[in-house]
Structures are given as structure tokens and as C-alpha cells.
Picture (cartoon, rainbow, N blue to C red):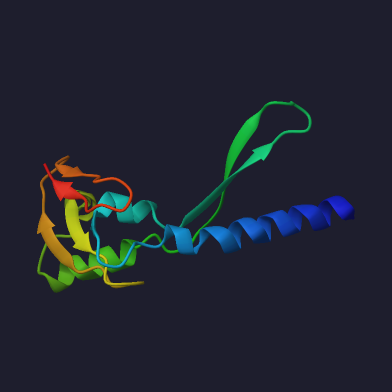
Length: 121
């Protein structure tokens, strides 16, 4: 019983600490591919059976912006094909607000790094 309570507490703590950290940062520009990774809550577990084994576990996907990206592309009369979803720049205006900025081209949208705008190559 103690193990179950501890595991439940650990999962709740991981979820509560991770959700805000995985939203886009208001005011920054993001590649669609980067926005799609936002909202996925992952954490690592150590195995008691195999000491030293570390496993990443995905708990849930909290919305990863896919619907918002498609809506933003439609609002800008852009195609919603995978290249436009992944390789376009979107501006983070807060939760669920990511208006389309421009299409970079297949493979041309680059991650600017933590706290910096993504950009077209």
C-alpha cells in the first residue's frame, strides 16, 4: 500500500510540475514541429529489477497544439499538410493562441533554443 501511495504521489508531482513547463512561452515564435512536442509529459523511472536501468515514460499528451496549428493555418488560408504543420513559424500568444507567421519550407524551420525565437533557415 505504501508503494502505491508513493508512486501515485510521484506521478501527481511529476504532472503538476511539468504541465506549465511544456506550454509555449508567450511572445516567442515556434516552429510547428516544436509546438507539437509541447504538452507531452514524460519522466524517468528507475528499475528495481534491473538496477541502473533508466526508462522514459510518457504519461499523457496534454494537447500538443496540433488542433491550434491546423486552425491557425486554416485562418491564414494555408495548406494543412505535414510540411506546413511542422515547418511553419507560429507566434505564441498564450495557451491555444498560436497564429501563423510564415512557411519556412520543408526542413527549413530551425529551433532557436530555450528562450529564443525559432526561425527559417
